[in-house]
Image 1: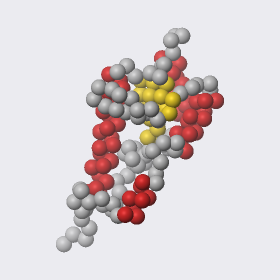
Image 2: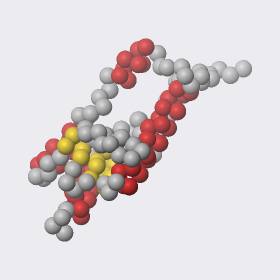
Image 3: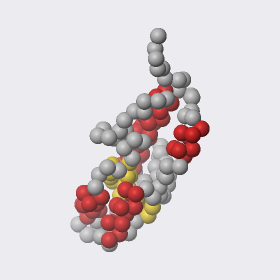
Image 4: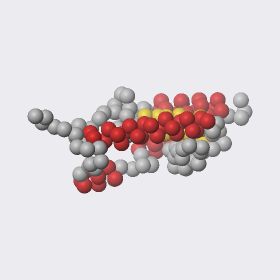
Length: 148
């Protein structure tokens, strides 16, 4: 007899867990704000949370440089299955596993659609220090700048 089995995939989390997860912000997270602040201090101007209409996808990058065609995503370790910090939930895995897999699949589809449309994609994990992530972003922006 199994002590613990996953419920069917269609079982949503408990009402309390649903409230908790619904309260998690989609934009303006602490890592995203820190990166934006450093980019702004570096003299870079950007757009925030803009949905793009592309062939086969409708990505919504966290930070967007429209002229340079650079899209920045600041991915949460849990929601986007970080290889270093991401973990599968121990409870209600039948619900969460497919949900998290869909997030990763959607991320790859967005990357492909953006690349196909001529955009450069930079993904930053929430655990990355903004002081390390921003120079990476600036290097991409400088490489894509029309002055080069």
